[in-house]
Image 1 (cartoon, helix red, strand yellow):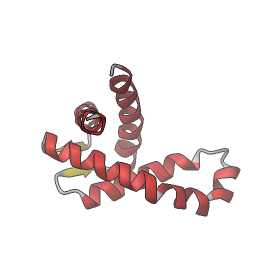
Image 2 (cartoon, helix red, strand yellow; image 1 turned 120 degrees about the vertical axis):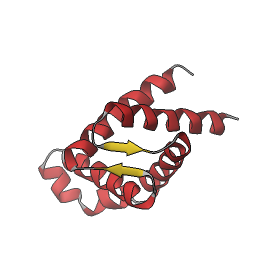
Image 3 (cartoon, one colour; image 1 turned 180 degrees about the vertical axis):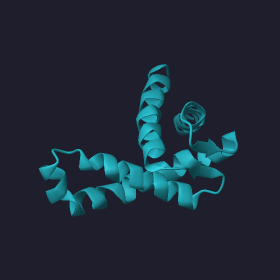
Image 4 (cartoon, helix red, strand yellow; image 1 turned 135 degrees about the vertical axis):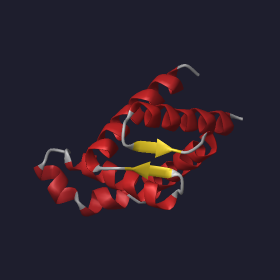
Length: 110
């Protein structure tokens, strides 16, 4: 039951964030849930590998290169999920920040 509630909250977070950020489109709530699942899978499988491979650059930039990795993960999700579109780097960057804020706010209410 907790997984279902978490899935709905994450889908709602994606939908709210896409509504707030211009340049990001999600066609429906079902697509937002699929985006949330794909982002969860990509963040758990690919992101640690990318952070490990880019560790020297990440250390030189004091961790700021992680933002570029997050944007790359969002672009990858946009290419995988039909109905989810990101227009540019800045839109993806703002979407990632807003998504984490909205997800934290909605997650704390449960």
